[in-house]
Image 1 (cartoon, rainbow, N blue to C red):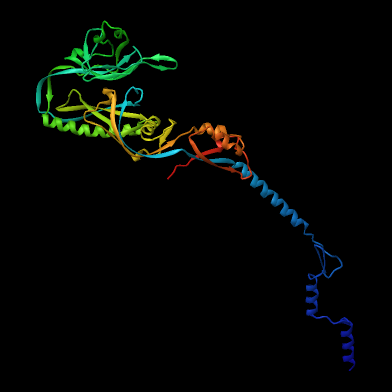
Image 2: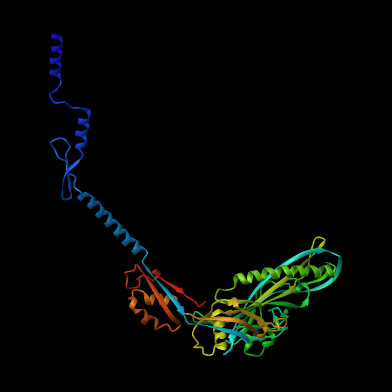
Length: 434
């Protein structure tokens, strides 16, 4: 009993007077994070200790404020970066049915449509089997440039017109040609010129000569003699008298036909790819002629050489559209116009087999289809006129452009009320009727 009592007393000495369990410890810890008081925007926590921690929310508002400012700055920056004006222009336009014949003039005679001639040449050859040797005579030929320094009028030279060298050798053209008159370049008059092929008056190698000058004997005794002259573009070659290898005529004609087909395809591709942007070149306005060159010996074969010359009738796009509008619209104000889609019109040469517009100084053709005539305006001038102007000034500016029917403007950013100072920031869009 004594031992028990002593143990009991000892145990009482070790254990505190207040009993605490694990549950009591956990509850006391959980109370450390439980809010016990709320005042305004601040929360007060009981940590179970003597100090209280206060965490203000004002720092969160500062972060949101900075973020908002950054966003506003970025929006302004992007607005300025992509600032500009888009002007949608609906020009005056008219649709008309065209079914008529026209005559165009090489010199642009008053009241008639003018045209120009583009010329492209190509030479190709083919070797065929020889059939024997024969005595032959061939005339030399070459290219020269004829100059018209007489006046501004064109001059027709008839077929077989003679050109003479200082040594008295005579060469002739094998078709009539028209030499353009003088023109003005940089304030000075320069002679008109035309390149042609000439052929020696006689066969033989004495007519094979280098570059030289030519006179036109037919003008001798008239004021034109000193103002019309020619100069070699190439040497005169091919003159020959003697024996040469020859081929079967059937084989020769077959070779020529094959060469012609290849040359024509090449010339057509080149013509349509190289025609100037400001001109129309219609398929029926293209003519191709062939010239046989002197046959050459190539070992035991005969080389057939052919030259092809393409003549293309070119129409200035604006003048062509104006001519169509003037002759088809009931009321035409003679303003600058264009044709929206030229593929809707078909241009056909009249009597193409007989037509020679590069010689005859005129080209007869018909036009059929639906023409969408659109009045044009100077886009760059309009941009300059709008630059820095208030949006409200648009009607005043457009009053100087009678070819414009209506216009709509979109300014960026949306709060802008004037056009940009930089012309490059103004975009013009042309709107056509469907």
